[in-house]
Image (cartoon, rainbow, N blue to C red; front, top):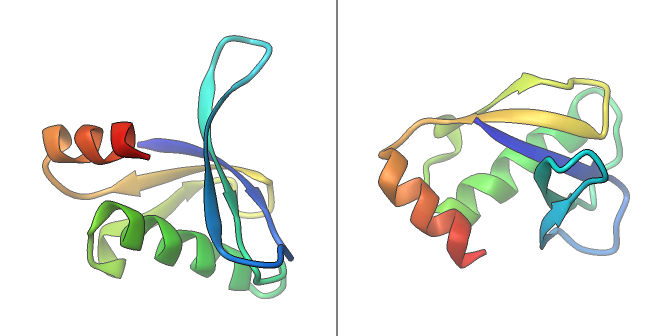
Length: 89
């Protein structure tokens, strides 16, 4: 599971890095060009994360936060490899 915070309607799709929140939790900050209409931004988030982690698009699914900027994604793959990819970001 990966926690992300999404900014839709951005100028470009990109990952801004890991951000610490006031409560001590951390999340991956993302920007996507897609607007939050009919799931377009959610699909763009999954595609961006899949590319960044070197996964097929079908390996990243939205687990929570369909209408929120705060989302939880499920990444299917080897946990050790995924952690290495996350640290690279």
